[in-house]
Image 1 (cartoon, rainbow, N blue to C red):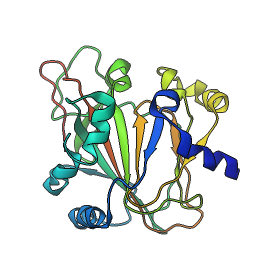
Image 2: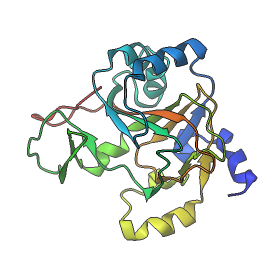
Image 3: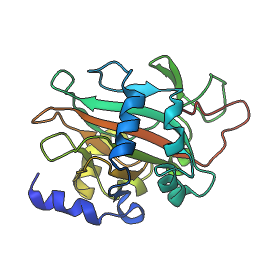
Image 4: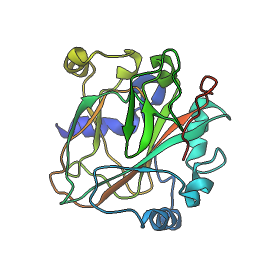
Length: 231
Protein backbone atom coordinates (compact mmCIF):
# COMPACT_ATOMS: atom_id res chain seq x y z
CA UNK A 1 0.00 0.00 0.00
CA UNK A 2 1.44 3.41 -0.94
CA UNK A 3 1.85 6.40 1.34
CA UNK A 4 -0.93 8.33 -0.42
CA UNK A 5 -3.41 5.71 0.74
CA UNK A 6 -2.32 6.24 4.34
CA UNK A 7 -2.60 10.03 4.04
CA UNK A 8 -6.29 9.80 3.14
CA UNK A 9 -7.32 8.44 6.53
CA UNK A 10 -7.37 11.81 8.30
CA UNK A 11 -9.98 13.20 5.89
CA UNK A 12 -12.47 10.35 6.18
CA UNK A 13 -16.00 10.82 7.53
CA UNK A 14 -18.43 8.31 8.98
CA UNK A 15 -21.27 9.28 6.63
CA UNK A 16 -19.29 9.16 3.40
CA UNK A 17 -16.63 6.56 4.12
CA UNK A 18 -18.02 4.57 7.03
CA UNK A 19 -15.10 5.54 9.27
CA UNK A 20 -13.81 8.64 11.05
CA UNK A 21 -10.84 9.30 13.32
CA UNK A 22 -11.09 11.40 16.47
CA UNK A 23 -7.68 12.62 17.54
CA UNK A 24 -6.36 12.80 21.11
CA UNK A 25 -9.62 11.74 22.77
CA UNK A 26 -7.77 10.28 25.76
CA UNK A 27 -4.90 11.96 27.59
CA UNK A 28 -2.00 10.19 29.28
CA UNK A 29 -3.86 9.85 32.60
CA UNK A 30 -6.90 8.26 30.93
CA UNK A 31 -4.71 5.89 28.93
CA UNK A 32 -2.90 4.84 32.10
CA UNK A 33 -6.20 4.27 33.92
CA UNK A 34 -7.64 2.14 31.12
CA UNK A 35 -4.40 0.21 30.82
CA UNK A 36 -4.45 -0.51 34.54
CA UNK A 37 -8.07 -1.68 34.34
CA UNK A 38 -7.07 -4.21 31.66
CA UNK A 39 -3.71 -5.25 33.14
CA UNK A 40 -5.12 -8.41 34.74
CA UNK A 41 -5.92 -9.93 31.34
CA UNK A 42 -3.68 -12.69 29.94
CA UNK A 43 -1.10 -11.49 27.39
CA UNK A 44 -0.45 -12.78 23.89
CA UNK A 45 -4.01 -13.66 22.95
CA UNK A 46 -5.51 -12.68 19.60
CA UNK A 47 -8.62 -11.15 21.14
CA UNK A 48 -10.12 -11.15 24.63
CA UNK A 49 -13.85 -10.55 25.02
CA UNK A 50 -14.50 -8.41 28.07
CA UNK A 51 -17.30 -8.46 30.61
CA UNK A 52 -17.59 -6.78 33.99
CA UNK A 53 -14.66 -4.35 33.82
CA UNK A 54 -16.45 -1.61 35.76
CA UNK A 55 -13.45 0.73 35.76
CA UNK A 56 -14.21 1.41 32.07
CA UNK A 57 -17.73 2.69 32.76
CA UNK A 58 -16.86 6.40 33.21
CA UNK A 59 -15.27 6.47 29.75
CA UNK A 60 -17.86 4.36 27.92
CA UNK A 61 -21.11 5.88 29.16
CA UNK A 62 -22.89 8.41 26.98
CA UNK A 63 -21.37 11.17 29.13
CA UNK A 64 -17.85 9.77 28.87
CA UNK A 65 -15.15 10.74 26.40
CA UNK A 66 -15.61 7.55 24.37
CA UNK A 67 -19.36 7.08 24.76
CA UNK A 68 -19.98 10.64 23.61
CA UNK A 69 -18.51 9.77 20.21
CA UNK A 70 -20.96 6.88 19.84
CA UNK A 71 -23.73 9.21 20.96
CA UNK A 72 -22.82 11.69 18.22
CA UNK A 73 -23.62 8.96 15.69
CA UNK A 74 -26.51 7.11 17.35
CA UNK A 75 -28.10 9.62 19.70
CA UNK A 76 -28.54 9.73 23.49
CA UNK A 77 -29.69 6.08 23.79
CA UNK A 78 -26.35 4.75 22.56
CA UNK A 79 -24.83 2.18 24.90
CA UNK A 80 -21.91 -0.25 24.69
CA UNK A 81 -23.07 -3.80 23.98
CA UNK A 82 -19.82 -5.70 23.39
CA UNK A 83 -16.12 -5.13 24.02
CA UNK A 84 -12.97 -6.93 22.86
CA UNK A 85 -9.31 -6.20 23.59
CA UNK A 86 -6.84 -6.86 20.77
CA UNK A 87 -3.09 -6.85 21.34
CA UNK A 88 -0.67 -7.86 18.61
CA UNK A 89 2.76 -8.81 19.93
CA UNK A 90 5.72 -10.80 18.56
CA UNK A 91 4.08 -13.88 20.13
CA UNK A 92 0.56 -13.15 18.87
CA UNK A 93 0.92 -11.58 15.44
CA UNK A 94 -2.08 -12.84 13.54
CA UNK A 95 -3.82 -11.75 10.35
CA UNK A 96 -7.51 -11.70 9.46
CA UNK A 97 -8.95 -11.63 5.95
CA UNK A 98 -11.59 -9.26 4.62
CA UNK A 99 -14.96 -9.68 6.30
CA UNK A 100 -18.00 -8.00 7.86
CA UNK A 101 -18.83 -8.32 11.57
CA UNK A 102 -22.14 -10.18 11.58
CA UNK A 103 -22.81 -11.32 15.14
CA UNK A 104 -23.82 -9.71 18.43
CA UNK A 105 -23.28 -10.87 22.01
CA UNK A 106 -26.39 -11.64 24.10
CA UNK A 107 -27.01 -12.78 27.66
CA UNK A 108 -28.58 -16.12 26.75
CA UNK A 109 -29.91 -18.11 23.84
CA UNK A 110 -33.56 -17.41 23.12
CA UNK A 111 -34.84 -18.66 19.78
CA UNK A 112 -36.13 -15.59 17.96
CA UNK A 113 -37.36 -15.23 14.40
CA UNK A 114 -34.71 -13.73 12.16
CA UNK A 115 -31.87 -14.40 14.61
CA UNK A 116 -29.36 -17.13 13.83
CA UNK A 117 -27.15 -19.05 13.48
CA UNK A 118 -26.00 -19.16 17.10
CA UNK A 119 -22.43 -19.56 18.32
CA UNK A 120 -20.39 -19.46 21.52
CA UNK A 121 -17.18 -17.39 21.57
CA UNK A 122 -14.96 -17.36 24.66
CA UNK A 123 -17.90 -18.80 26.61
CA UNK A 124 -20.23 -15.97 25.57
CA UNK A 125 -23.40 -16.47 23.57
CA UNK A 126 -23.43 -14.85 20.11
CA UNK A 127 -26.01 -14.75 17.34
CA UNK A 128 -26.30 -13.32 13.85
CA UNK A 129 -29.13 -10.73 13.90
CA UNK A 130 -31.05 -9.30 10.95
CA UNK A 131 -28.62 -7.19 8.95
CA UNK A 132 -30.70 -4.07 9.55
CA UNK A 133 -29.73 -4.18 13.23
CA UNK A 134 -26.02 -4.21 12.39
CA UNK A 135 -26.54 -1.31 9.99
CA UNK A 136 -27.82 0.78 12.92
CA UNK A 137 -24.73 0.08 15.07
CA UNK A 138 -21.30 1.66 15.29
CA UNK A 139 -17.96 0.24 16.36
CA UNK A 140 -15.27 2.22 18.16
CA UNK A 141 -11.60 1.30 18.36
CA UNK A 142 -9.73 2.98 21.20
CA UNK A 143 -5.99 3.01 20.56
CA UNK A 144 -3.95 2.51 23.72
CA UNK A 145 -0.74 2.42 21.67
CA UNK A 146 0.42 4.08 18.49
CA UNK A 147 -0.44 2.19 15.30
CA UNK A 148 1.80 3.04 12.37
CA UNK A 149 1.99 1.65 8.86
CA UNK A 150 4.27 -1.22 9.93
CA UNK A 151 2.33 -2.20 13.06
CA UNK A 152 -0.82 -3.71 11.55
CA UNK A 153 -3.30 -0.83 11.25
CA UNK A 154 -6.85 -1.90 10.56
CA UNK A 155 -7.63 -1.92 6.84
CA UNK A 156 -11.06 -0.85 5.65
CA UNK A 157 -12.87 -0.60 2.33
CA UNK A 158 -14.35 2.94 2.46
CA UNK A 159 -18.00 3.14 1.49
CA UNK A 160 -18.55 -0.61 1.82
CA UNK A 161 -20.93 0.01 4.75
CA UNK A 162 -23.52 1.06 2.16
CA UNK A 163 -23.41 -2.24 0.27
CA UNK A 164 -25.62 -4.19 2.70
CA UNK A 165 -24.78 -7.78 3.49
CA UNK A 166 -21.94 -8.80 1.18
CA UNK A 167 -21.83 -12.48 0.21
CA UNK A 168 -18.50 -14.19 0.89
CA UNK A 169 -18.00 -14.76 -2.83
CA UNK A 170 -18.42 -11.04 -3.53
CA UNK A 171 -16.12 -9.63 -0.84
CA UNK A 172 -12.99 -9.50 -2.99
CA UNK A 173 -14.71 -7.60 -5.80
CA UNK A 174 -16.34 -5.22 -3.27
CA UNK A 175 -12.95 -4.37 -1.77
CA UNK A 176 -11.46 -3.82 -5.22
CA UNK A 177 -14.35 -1.48 -6.08
CA UNK A 178 -14.16 0.53 -2.84
CA UNK A 179 -10.39 0.57 -2.46
CA UNK A 180 -8.42 0.21 0.77
CA UNK A 181 -7.49 2.62 3.54
CA UNK A 182 -5.16 1.92 6.49
CA UNK A 183 -6.43 3.42 9.75
CA UNK A 184 -3.35 4.89 11.41
CA UNK A 185 -3.57 6.22 14.96
CA UNK A 186 -1.65 7.75 17.82
CA UNK A 187 -2.16 6.54 21.39
CA UNK A 188 -5.36 8.17 22.62
CA UNK A 189 -7.02 8.40 19.20
CA UNK A 190 -10.40 6.78 18.59
CA UNK A 191 -11.70 5.44 15.29
CA UNK A 192 -15.46 5.35 14.75
CA UNK A 193 -16.80 2.86 12.19
CA UNK A 194 -20.10 1.78 10.73
CA UNK A 195 -20.25 -1.77 12.11
CA UNK A 196 -20.94 -3.49 8.73
CA UNK A 197 -17.90 -1.99 6.98
CA UNK A 198 -15.61 -4.48 5.25
CA UNK A 199 -12.32 -4.67 7.09
CA UNK A 200 -9.18 -6.79 7.48
CA UNK A 201 -6.02 -7.00 9.57
CA UNK A 202 -2.59 -8.03 8.36
CA UNK A 203 0.24 -9.34 10.49
CA UNK A 204 2.49 -6.57 11.78
CA UNK A 205 5.77 -6.02 9.94
CA UNK A 206 7.33 -4.88 13.22
CA UNK A 207 5.27 -6.52 15.93
CA UNK A 208 5.13 -4.73 19.27
CA UNK A 209 2.32 -4.03 21.71
CA UNK A 210 -0.59 -2.68 19.68
CA UNK A 211 -3.43 -2.63 22.18
CA UNK A 212 -6.84 -1.71 20.81
CA UNK A 213 -10.04 -1.73 22.86
CA UNK A 214 -12.91 -2.36 20.44
CA UNK A 215 -16.49 -1.57 21.43
CA UNK A 216 -19.81 -2.08 19.68
CA UNK A 217 -22.55 0.45 20.44
CA UNK A 218 -26.26 0.27 19.75
CA UNK A 219 -29.29 2.43 20.49
CA UNK A 220 -31.74 -0.36 19.58
CA UNK A 221 -33.58 -2.70 21.95
CA UNK A 222 -33.59 -6.39 21.07
CA UNK A 223 -36.87 -8.30 20.66
CA UNK A 224 -38.59 -9.51 23.83
CA UNK A 225 -36.64 -12.34 25.42
CA UNK A 226 -33.27 -11.31 24.02
CA UNK A 227 -30.92 -9.02 25.93
CA UNK A 228 -27.62 -7.46 24.92
CA UNK A 229 -24.71 -8.93 26.86
CA UNK A 230 -23.34 -5.46 27.56
CA UNK A 231 -19.94 -4.92 29.12
